[in-house]
Image 1 (cartoon, rainbow, N blue to C red):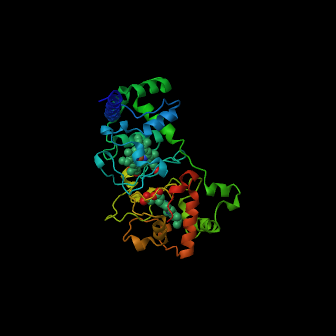
Image 2 (tube, helix red, strand yellow; image 1 turned 180 degrees about the horizontal axis):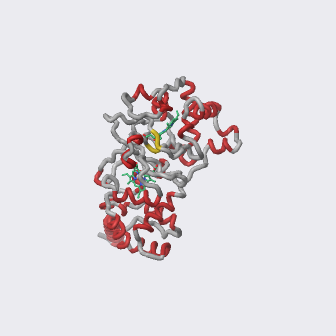
Image 3 (tube, rainbow, N blue to C red; image 1 turned 120 degrees about the horizontal axis):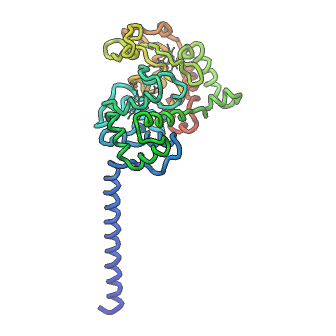
Length: 338
Ligand code: HEC
Ligand code: HEC
């Protein structure tokens, strides 16, 4: 081996060692990151406000048993904070019995959950943490976990002047949720006198929504909800057996009533209804057009729903076009076409 050859040989050896070293470093970093995930938060930067702290908690699996799911696992931010499946998976893959509604446009609501069992966002926010089929973590445990996390401990001290408690966790989550309002839609631009913001079909659809379809009787106001509990026929005591509001009030008049949901971003938040039984808005419209054709033996159905609407194909399409104008621009790319 002459000098130059041995020099090349040496270089090759060093290179190899270098790459092995690099792989080793990467592996250690990977193992460290994986381990770290289960004990520390996935926080990227220090939150400057309560709202940012709430956003951090919303996206952090730390609030669930075994760090398995976060609020955002079911309320997916890219889908207007709702899920894309009928029933979401909680810890250990457990399925709940109700569809995940959007967590947006909640600031004007006075009831939460499909049956309205919570009356403030603070009260609502801690519900999913303890729910066995959602995050399944006793609140005292959640509080302990955040106190044991040095990042969260310092954030709470800075923003609330105290350690994490049940109350300030709820406050941070609710403060974040109150910011999730969407009014950047073609419909809002139309209402502000931009005639060209929505199609002619959608304009006809708005009229059908207000009059012939009777939708407006239950879905009105800035977010298209009266916040009242109504029975649209999705309870028959057989395959449809969620009693809805009745579980909260025990008043027999409330059997099968559910909270009338708002309709902003409705083309993004399917599947629809408390149980996610309709995949598309077309199915929803077909149902409203003639409820009795789809559900036999509805109990306690609202009188508004007793006679078929008799919408023809064009009217159904117009109504659909109108509903699609309620999508905030930021979600336009994931909105359903049907
Ligand atoms: C496993 C999925 C899952 C997780 C995790 C989850 N949610 Fe939910 N969320 C749901 C379901 C399902 C409902 C409806 C439950 C019902 O009506 O009984 C709901 C309802 C809500 C509502 C009420 C919406 C309305 O229209 O009344 C809000 C707000 C909300 N969740 C926020 C949160 C927050 C905050 C967290 C985290 C602390 C969270 N959710 C975690 C599935 C989930
Ligand atoms: C009698 C009151 C009432 C009338 C009339 C009514 N709705 Fe509803 N709407 C409700 C209630 C209550 C729910 C929730 C039912 C459930 O969760 O099972 C609902 C749910 C919906 C949903 C699903 C929302 C979601 O997030 O899952 C859509 C879409 C909808 N309505 C559109 C319409 C349209 C379009 C019309 C007119 C053709 C209409 N509604 C007429 C009360 C009404």
